[in-house]
Length: 319
Image (cartoon, rainbow, N blue to C red; front, side, top):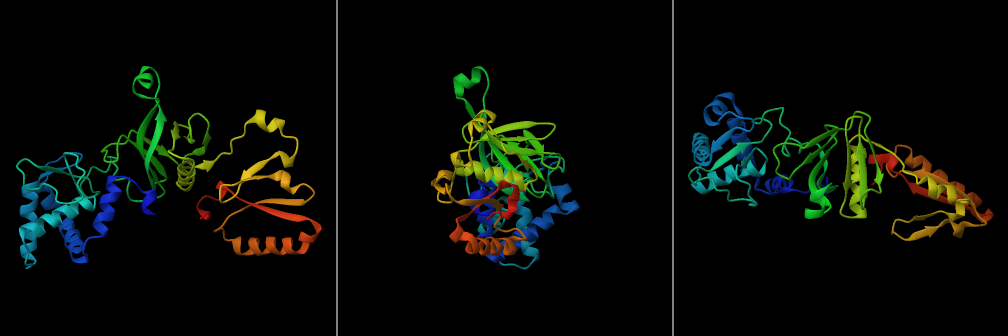
């Protein structure tokens, strides 16, 4: 996924790790495998949902392992390897930090938690465990209720991850949360639709839970809706019955083109209009597009206009 789709500290650190020199990445991977071995894990980490290790103990093990591999290295390089373990999502500082590198391993009583799948309890749902298979991650807002809404504002931010691999959407308190506030199963008759309850609103529901989110913009609203569809939800078209009842003619409708310009159907009065849903990446696209073009070329002089509308029903088949 493009970087803009995966926002948040865990994903930023992962991108930082991928930019490290290849040799350093290789050493991080080897040390990670060593620390994940049963005997080392039992000796080095304190047992808990997210096993703990002190920074100085971690550096001692890394130094020892690098020496056994006959690598000439400095304490600074060992610290870079340790930093790579954080950047790759294997460990995280117990005390939340905004650092990208140079994590404090040497300070007395510094502690790090094992958040990688090799260390963390398999039942724990953290931002790190939701990373693999994520297709969208970032901030969405929910409506506050009651007295707090008046005191603190009407919207509350949450960190949300849509995961195509797990067919789930996770709602967290922050982008470095250790536990999910909600987990929405997208494989169990989940639906998604636009919502008027909040500005740029999205309603996501399955038989067990309903969430109404607000995105930061119309563009983000559409991004998130499509990501929820790609994660397994079925799109539900929302109609305002009162408004549609007032419409007496096709020519009273309007839509927007790809540039965001309003297009009124009234401009097609006197034409024969074929309105069709299309996708850009469907298997039938190479057939459908030329057929529509051929049809238009054949009958355009007789007044045919083809209006092709992209549609959310095509989900991942859209660009």
